[in-house]
Image 1 (cartoon, rainbow, N blue to C red):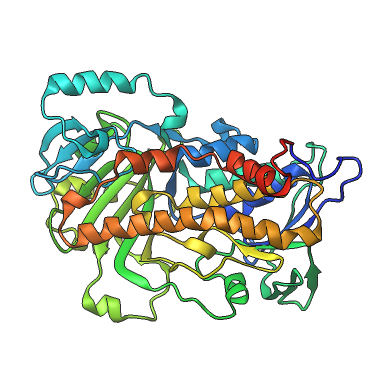
Image 2 (cartoon, rainbow, N blue to C red):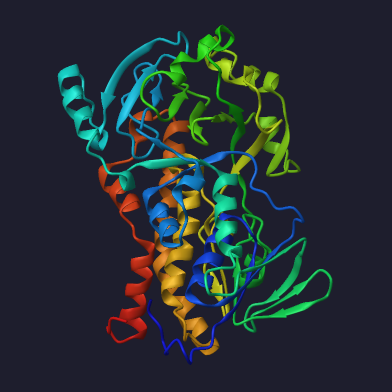
Length: 464
């Protein structure tokens, strides 16, 4: 582990993290692992990660394994890349796809199976069998792990609070709302009036970030883009006849089923297994009506949409795709989210304060990279803050961190926007992820990037 001073004499940093989501907890664990003193302030009294599952990309898994995450506790399902497509589509909307199963959303007919290396279509079954055999040699880091958010959250919290690591556990303060921040000083004030002093403040407080406002000096809105997604997690179907219409999901390659409507307005059903295959994560995307777009009072998330309302939005889909909505709902409700992004910001840092994750670069879900970007943020930052880093060092370290992370996060955000723009314009042939993009996203090693930046910038190239 790199350090600026010997472990025996180094003084740990006092670090305040605002927000106990996945990005905040990943940062807390990474910084505690180094030996720093970390406090996390979460405004909700009983913090849980609700709403849906997510796809842990290879770059995120590298960081999590470095942090000591035990994979079995994530209860994830490795996806082989299966993806449903509408009749006539020749491209994939899903990153890191290897195999695709095409469906006609009107008839439910399975039309073909093909492999898509770099967006090229493989027509004949002999070629497909050859390419499919290549998949058997794929190593786990190349695959995507589908996990419920709660399982990732609980595992990170377990490590953060674990008492037997020889380091002070993270202090988790739930029900503590931060009301203001002094970025240059590294202080936050709680709603109770308590002032908390720190050497470093990290705002991991989400798309409506308070810390972002203090870093920028103004309120940066995250405007809706005109697409809503309805998210639910259902219990996987039993084998009885009642759910016999779900063979399109339960049979064949384990992976994502994506059923977009060919044409406008944009609609898409996306689902995949999680929690050891016991649950099904389901997402229904649809273009908002003009009336819905004008409703500026609509919150980012509200659990008020019913299964009947979702069915109505997809009434012309084959009935078998509605069978998901007949399954027992694991969460008891369907969450309705208006998709939003945070525009490219002039900076993520001010003084001794930085923002990460959705607070800095909330993106669209069409590359499945949101969680990965937040976890990568934490991994790179940890590499730049070895034990022995001083309070006076913080502004320079944050500046280097921003210089590394900001271009990558903005690249992902722009690629996500390009995906949805192409889809909504009816240009499905432009809506796929090329091999160079997949490689750039999957091969990233945040821990190594952070440590190398420390060596090159602050240790004179000396390997420490």
